[in-house]
Length: 267
Image (cartoon, rainbow, N blue to C red):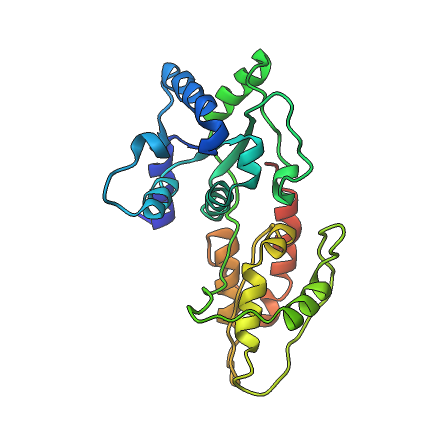
């Protein structure tokens, strides 16, 4: 049985991950947990299920690898929390459906990430909203994976703010946060740090928020050879399936078509 089918079957059995900021979302998350349990919806909540002696983030990723849904409790501190943001990012990378829930009555949404602004925010104090939320949890998640292929930054990474900010200004409109439709190239002698600078851009939060459909990474080298396999690999990352074309010319238009179709996917 293909791995992706096993993963879907496993997720169908595993339910919901609850993400929240402990400082101001703990009480709401506990109430949500009780509501879901009363409806017989299986869930995984990090504080409740945490095992002593195991690495915290490994437990989080293990849970997110086996659930279909994330209930993301949005409170003022959740919008500021590095951990909540990290959980949401990883969930999207795994194809988990992320459902934002208003954890407080008056919520300022001005600072929400770009990808979240396109989503429906559930207000569980409204009976119809609660009913819709429960119904959505009982359907099948069809969220596309949001790939992030950039390699980690080296342990001895030294920021270069001058070059970094110059490149960032070529990719983003710093006022609106919108991406700029441009191809940027780094040129320089070997060992100058071009690859590390590109990695730093990929790991920047502003870049990830702007390019919220994912970040792909390909290393070609001086002699890339046949590019067909490279294109096929990228398409598989985006769709979960390997296409059937035989040369790069036949597949050249596929990635742009995939980008258009992914923009139309409802969330």
